[in-house]
Image 1 (tube, helix red, strand yellow):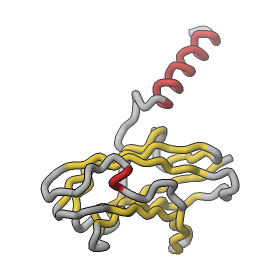
Image 2 (image 1 turned 90 degrees about the horizontal axis):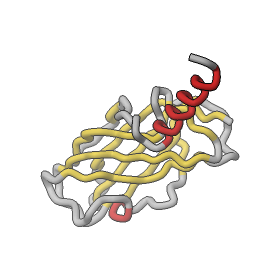
Image 3 (image 1 turned 60 degrees about the horizontal axis):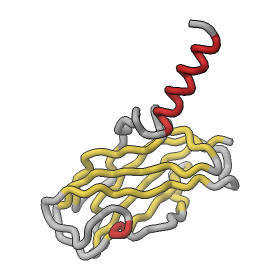
Length: 153
């Protein structure tokens, strides 16, 4: 393969990954999902762990889960876990019912929770664990998952 062809193939692969064509579920650690079961976590783009999160970029998050309870609403909270300390990541839309979930939530149904993880340019370049929680209307955990990430310039 000549240099020009290699560049074209590399660009095509990059575009495919960027558009989510090659999106694969990420391996996550469950951190206490009690009122729901996580079926799949997708972060785009994140081809390998730790996810490389570039400053100034927003990442798509899609969590498929099934509910074990009924709930009128849901609220998400996201943290960066640094040396066992949870630092809150502000979400533009914490309301799960405005993030792909059709509310009220019904026992036994599956849902796709969709949101964005914005990585602000003022964040430090650091390795950490992202912890994403979704609470039901009784403060129970519909889901909680963790993945390792690295924030980079």
